[in-house]
Amino acid sequence: MQFLTAITLVKLLKEHYGKRLSHISLSPLMPGSGKCILDDVYVSPKICSVDINPMGKRKNVYQIGSYEELFYSSNKLNRKIFIQGEPGCGKSTFTAKMVLDWCIASNAATQETQRRRFMDIEKLKIFKFIFYISLRDSGDQNEVVEMMKDQIIRKLFSTAKHEQACKLIETIMTTEECLVILDGWDEWTDPHCKEPVPVLVESYQHCTVLTTTRVWKMKSRYMKDSDIGTLLELEGVLDPRELSEVLLSRLVGEEELYEKRAKFHFFITQHNFNQLIVSPVMLSVMVCSWIDEIHVKGSLCEIYSVLLECLFKKAAEEDTCISDPLQLSCLENKVCLQTNIEHLKCLSKTAFCLLFSDCRERSVVFTDKELSKFMSKQEKAFALKTGIITERECSTLTKESSTLCFFHKSVQEFLAAIHIAINSSVIQEDIARYLNVFPDAYLYIAQVFISLCGLNVIAASELSGLMDEHNDFFLSGFQKIICDGYKEAKSNEHDDSDINLKLSIFYFADHFNTDNLRKILMKNTSNVRFLHVIPVDTERSAPTYRRIYRSDDSDTSDTEKDKGTRDYFFDLDQIDVHEIVRASSHCLEHLEGVDEIPIDLLSKCKKLKQ
Image (cartoon, rainbow, N blue to C red; front, side, top):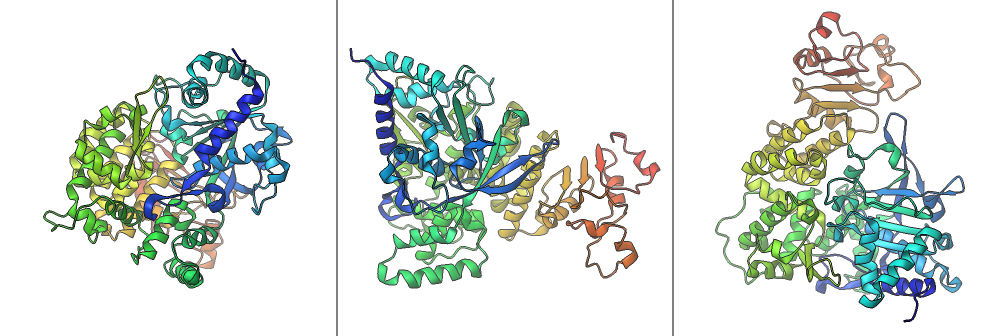
C-alpha cells in the first residue's frame, strides 16, 4: 500500500478547496442562478477588533486590514479567534477567500493583488495546513476531528485509506502549525447538549482555531469572556459602492453601465440606504430589485419579500386570480407570492417547524425524511425549483444520501416569522414550550423576532414578553434586539399604539440608539427591573439629577445644565425617573447612575440591591 504523506495531503486539500470554494453565487436573484469566480467579484470586508473590558462590555475599537493583524498580537499567534457578524454580512465569503489565499500563498508569481486590504497573503504560509469545516453540515457531531473525517477525509480518500489518512492528520495536528476554520457556529448545537463549542483536544497545541458566528451566539450565557481569545466583528463590505458596481456590471450592458451606476448611487443616497447596503446579501437584493424597477423603502421585511417574489417567479405557473391574500403590508403588491399563497404557507410552516424543533442539530440542515413531515413531493419540487430550499448529495458514511437546507438561514427565519404572523397562537404554544426547553434560545430567534415586528407587531409584542422573561441576567445584546425590532416596526409604518415591545433591563450608554430606547422605556415604566445610566465622560462621576435634560433644552437654565447633564449623549428628556421607580417598585432590582431618589421611595423597592 502506498503511504500518504503530508505533501500529498496539502496537494489534495488545495485541489479540494479550489473546487469547493472558488465559485460563489453573486445573488440568488441573478438570471440562471449562475456562479462567478470568487476572485472576480470579491470586495474587501470591514473588520474591527472588539475590546472586552473587565466588566464584560464590548466595543469595536479599530479596524484591521491584514492577515498579520488578524492572526498576531504582540508578535504571537492568536490561537483562538472568533469573527462575529450579522446575517449576510460576508463571514463565510471572507473565510473562503482566506482559504483560497492560503492555497496560492506559496506561489510567489501569484502574490501580486489589486486589493487594498488583506494583501499580505504570505503571512498565511505560517500554516502548513488549513482545515475548513462547515458547522451547519456537522449538526450531529461535537468533535472537530470527527467533523474533519466527514467533510475532508471521506471526500479526499478512498475507504481503504481512511485509517491511514486519520493517523496522518493526527500526527500533523500534533506537530505542525494548522489553522482550523469552523464556519457558522450559530448554526451548530452540540447534539449531546454538553459543549458550547466543538471540541478540539488540548494536545493539538499548534492549532489555531478561527470560528465565525452571528453576534448573538457570542453573547450566550454559556460563552465565558475568558474563553474567547481574540474577538473581531465583520460589519459588511468596506466599500458598498465597489460591490454595487460589480453587481451592476453583470446585469447591464457595458454601453449603459456608467449611466446605471450613477442612477443607482443617487437612489441609494436619496433613500438613505447607505447603512443598509453594507450587507452583501441586502445589497444584491437592492441592486436586482432596482434593475427590475422595484424600488424598496428600506424595511427588512420588504426586502425579503422582494427576494421571495423573484424566487417564486422561477417556479410559478401562469398567473391565477388571488383568492385569499395574506394581509401583510410587505406582501400587498407581490402578485406571484399571493397567487401561490399555499406554497408560501407551506414553506413558512416548514421553516418554523424546523427552526423551532427540539432537535436543534437538524433545524438548519435536515434530511428528506424530515422534510417530508411538512411537505408533499409536489411542494418539495416547487421549493427546489425556486431555489429557496437546496439539496446536496452526501459522500459520507455517517449521513443519509442527501441533505437539504434553506439557501440562507435568514430566509428561513423570515419565512418562520410569516408563519407566526398569520398563526400567532404558536407563540404561547410552540414557542413558549421551545424557550422552556432551551432557555438561551431567545437570542437564537432574534432575526425571527425582528422580522415579526415588521409583519405583525402585535404578535411581536407578545413574543417580546416571552423573550424578556428568559433574559434573566444583564445583557445589552437583548436590548439591541428589541431596539432593532422597534425600528423594523416603524419602517413598516405600524401605529405607535400597537408597538408595545416588552423590555425590563435598560442600559443607557453612548453606543445605543437612545431615542428608540427612550420610547421603549416609556412603554415599560412599570416593568423596569434594571436601569443603568452611563455617562459619556467616564472620567467624571455621574451627575445628580431628577430629569436628564438635553443640552439644547430651551426650558433648562444654564445653572441646571452646569450640574452635569450635558455629559450625557443620550436623551431621557421628559422622563420622570421618580415615576419609573415608583411604578416599578414591585420588580426593580438594580438602579445605577440615577441620584436624588428619595429614601422613602427606594424603601418601597423590596428587590432593589442596596
